[in-house]
Image 1 (cartoon, rainbow, N blue to C red):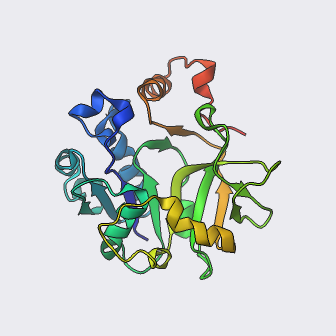
Image 2 (image 1 turned 180 degrees about the horizontal axis):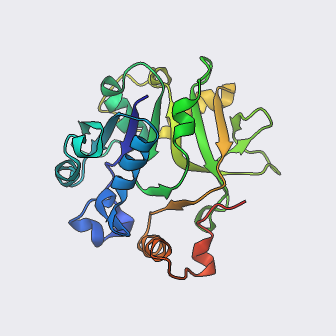
Image 3 (image 1 turned 30 degrees about the vertical axis):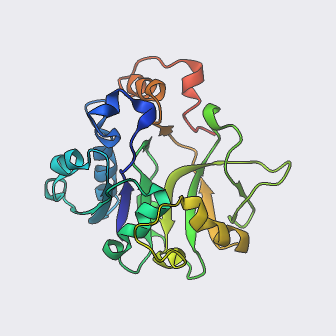
Length: 241
């Protein structure tokens, strides 16, 4: 099974750090954020990874190279400007093949067991599978609901909601309506029809998940990784149910 790491964003909320360093190369503990993804994918049995790049992408390519020193083969999907999540994946489809593939946002940090996605047999009627987490303080409204059949939906009044973790499994056919490899669009546009039709499955992950989207959250995560105390408000980034 192949995997894609989304690493093409500008990281605007992490400036000034990202003025000269791309967000995936910011350090968590003693190594860059993107290295955790690569190593955990390799541990899960993935041997082919596609990474999209744009802003300062040459630095990411220089650091990871062809992936051989990590035990994996890396192919690069270069964007002249970021195409958002959906557009970035669409551009990379020729590198990803015709089978379901894992997608990971480059700005999350988690101990989610990726091997479970590699080992699972995916139903032919599944457009996508989303890993969801409890809503963090910075996104209390959540993104989706999840019914008893593990189908992802748009929440109605009174429904329990969850936040999309940035980890998913996608089928290349799900992008069939988007013919242009240079079109910019979010992943939510890709998922909309499948969610309405009941073709998007999901699960709730209750382990450690962190959205490294701001300077404050980056600092708090580094405190956590170093074993130092994190304030109660920042601990809410941990999804422990």
